[in-house]
Image (cartoon, rainbow, N blue to C red; front, top):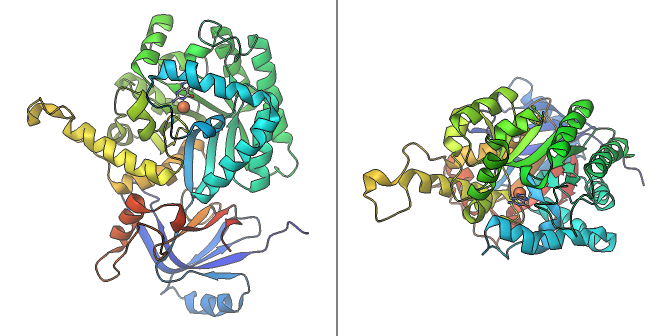
Length: 456
Ligand code: GUN
Ligand code: FE
């Protein structure tokens, strides 16, 4: 069977937000996608060529026409996932971060030494994330080179765009004997081996699956390892992902050990680049924000995970207004939901709690932090454009020259909580309802790089 794809054309209502705070809706758009999955033409009704293009498209067997109530949106970008924690999704959230890692998470991740354990779990995770509309996924694997290579193989075979890292963690003071790199040299050698493997994968010439240097977080790494990883990232010019100033315990640990915040420490090790994703960054200072902006890093805001582990609400509005690249992450399984739409709602809700405050004992005037809210449209922007900018990828919007990573949201399916009244709801209302109540059943089609991964 040939794997070659043909050009495709989609006719329907396109909804995206290339500019933060601005919703763009194009009714009856004709979107042409080249055989290599790039958006090569967008005809808008009323343009001089539109009628002609429509007549031609209607004769094209490759035409997909959306029905009333269906909307073409950019695919969703998840900036922070722990792939091995998939079996733990939705449980074990009653412990603080340190105890959760030691008692639940490290023992689970250690099981991925066994490829027969890893294979079905990774396969199920990627299938489910695609079904939820996650077209780009940013994954931490485990310390196991072979299992992490398997995750890359699975993403490549199933068609998901992915950034994947073999986790590095060698600090014997913070990591258990049963789950740790034996030496920094092993961690560095296997990090290189993983990058070489992903870049050399047959069928990955378009770099749809990308490697990331992945120090778990400062506490789990020795300084020798952090320094070596910084060097590798520069040598290979690849992505970097790590956790940054997530919780009081973690933030204070780094202050004690290095005398500076995570951001400054990571910078000193050469780990802040325009390809770095910092998960959480809840406790960053204004100075840290400047450093992050200067380095052009991305932040993975994980609002549902933060409820359980962070001791604080990430100041998403302040970070966005500061001009930082902020996207959203599920943080499976620190966050209990596997989809980015739930995290859009989480981001809106968390920001409203920050703005209003949470302690009813305080007077209203003293309770909150003014001007902290993000809107549903900001959340949608983070879920698409913010994530794409953070990773430096031409996805997240349905514009000329971008990869066709897209989803069709169907507001008419029977088994869903998404209800639209066409005579009452504006385009903006409909997107807001998608963000608030859209779910897996509403995601009717999913494409990555023009390849249809869900629907027909
Ligand atoms: N910090 C270090 N490891 C982890 C992890 O697996 N999840 C979260 N949320 N934080 C971490
Ligand atoms: Fe995490």
